[in-house]
Length: 300
Figure 1 (cartoon, rainbow, N blue to C red):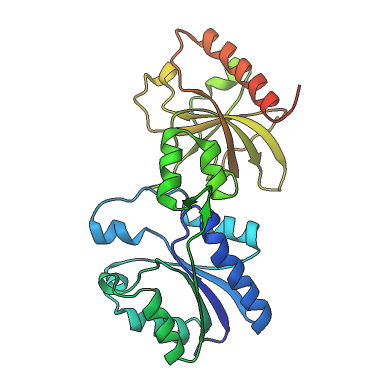
Figure 2: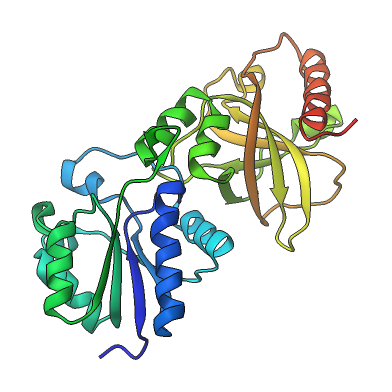
C-alpha cells in the first residue's frame, strides 16, 4: 500500500493552460481540506501518439509541464509516467484501482472530457462511479471558457503555429515556455557583437512560427534578463537547411552559459524570419530587434 495519501489531478496537461487551472486549484483545495498531498499524474508522451500512430505535437516537454505546475500552483509532486502499449491496454477500472493501491489516491480530480483506459473506455461518469465504489472522493471539472471559447491545448497549438503568441499566452494564462541546455552553435553572434545562446526544441515539441520574439530569460540561479529570441533555421548563415533552433541574444548580460539550463518565456512576436544579403545587414537588424524588445518591455 502506498505510504503517501494523495489527491491526484488527472490529465496530460499540455501547456498547463487556463482550462487545467481549475483542476489544479481544486486539487490544492481538497489537499488543504483533507490534509492530503496535492499531486498530478501525467505522461512522458501523448497517448494519442501511440494509439493513432501519428505524432501529436506538444506545447511543452514533460519537464516543462512539471516546472509550470510547480511554479504556478506550488504542486511539486508531479508524477510523470511512461505511456506504452501496456498502459494503453490497461482496463479503465484497473487504472483507477492502481491509483489507489500504487499512489495512495484518496481523491481524484479530472476534466469533464477525460478519457482513459483501454480504447478510451473510461470517462468522467465511470470515474465518478468507481471512486464511489472505492470510497474515495472525486471531482469532475466542467469546461473553462475564455472570451466564449473553450480553452484547449489544440486551440493553443494553432495560435503558436500561426505565431500569435499573444493569443496563445492569453489561453495559457502564462507565457509560453521553452527550457533547454545551452548548446554550441556557429558563434557568429560573437563576431557581430551580439552573442547568442543556442537552444533546441525537444523531440515532439511544437516549434512556434519562425520569427523574432521578445522573451524573458531565466538563468539557473534565478537571474532574470530580457532577450531577443529568433526561432528558425538561420537562413542567412545556413541557407535554411538546418534544424529549427532558438537563438537568444540576452540584453545586458555577459557570461558563458554553455551547458547551463535556461528557461525562455515568450511574449510578443516582433517580426517574421528574414534572410539578409550579408552579415552587416544581419547585425544592423539584430541591433534594431534589441531596441524593439526594450521598447516592448517598456525600456528606452
